[in-house]
Amino acid sequence: MERRLFYKDVVPFAAMVAAECATVGSNTGFKAAIARGMSYYVFTLYVCVAAAVVLIPFALIFHRSQQLPPNKISLFFKLVALSALGLSCQLLGNKGLEFSSPTLSSAISNLIPAFTFILAVFFRMEKIDLKRRSSIAKIVGSAVSISGALVVVLYKGPIVISNPYSQGPKELGLLYHNHNQPLGSSHPRPNWILGGLCFVFQYLSNSFWYILQTQIIKTYPDEVTVVAVYYSIQAVLTAPVCLLAETDMNAWKMTNALSFVFILNSGLMGQAFVAATHTWGLSLKGPVYVSSFRPLSIAIAAAMGAILLADDLHLGSIIGAIIISVGFYGILWGKAKEEEWKELDGERLESSSKAPLLHYYRVEDP
Image (cartoon, rainbow, N blue to C red; front, side, top):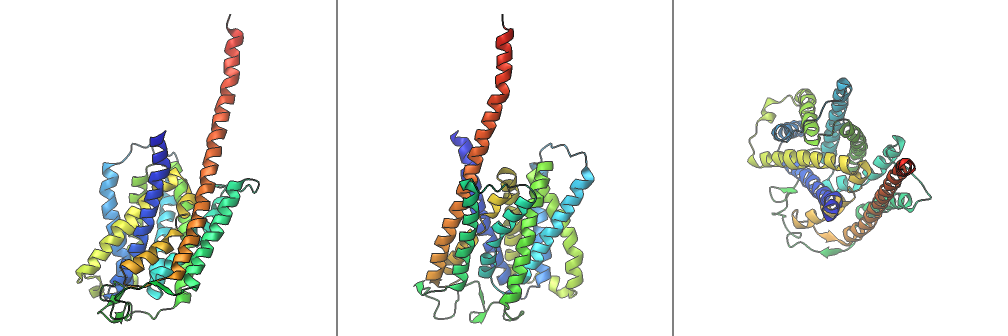
């Protein structure tokens, strides 16, 4: 019982938190890479290729002997559609980061639970019963989490923890290049409206990705193989788009070792690890559970900014993180209650199906 509880609750929780940390770290790495002259399209393609190269050996080693569904063509086109959604998420997300910052990306990512919950209800993967406290808890928890993200963005507040490098050149900050030159100064000027719109469409596509991936895993429950094929197809789709968009052949040369490290980090952790973890979580817990962890990214981004990026930690970030945690707990509580009720309903159905059979043998027994 304890091992089952550990596998179904503790491990998924830790894995989802680790995935959010990897996502925020990948976003930070992208900002640092383009600050060192790397093209937006070059980074996108190299990351897809790196993720595919890493996952293919794992798929060959840990491949399960799953029988393909009868309608193989339908599965293939679903994987192509999933890869197209993944490509749109990457292109929109990276373009949004080019215009704004990882903090704005993390803040707007709090729309994912709401988008996913609406889509899950629309596709009949989730049920709303306002008479049950679990449904109310998920609705209220999503609203509270989004409110916490708005607090972080709109209310800065006084400095609670001041970084010793905040008054001078942020030499230790990854968000600064050449010591006193802000990151991205040689790229498009910051435009938070365009960046925010890119993130909104990115996370809407991401929500569709969760729904479609859940359906694929139900059809073919081999998570590692599905993710490896997904990134292989995505790399094939990404190559012509990026090669046509970036015509300067010199841009494709890897001359900066640190940019290569950022590509590996984004490919291995930000893409391969996150996609595999989310796919496993979708098969185990469903799309609403996986998406409900996105509000944590704003708190993780604030912590990373204070620790790694030489940023000050403001009161608004702390208050927002607390509000997000409260809403996040509400969503998890609602999902836990629903799982308890499903287990009870399953036990009742099992006992009711056995009862007539037992009665029959009692009657016939001489």
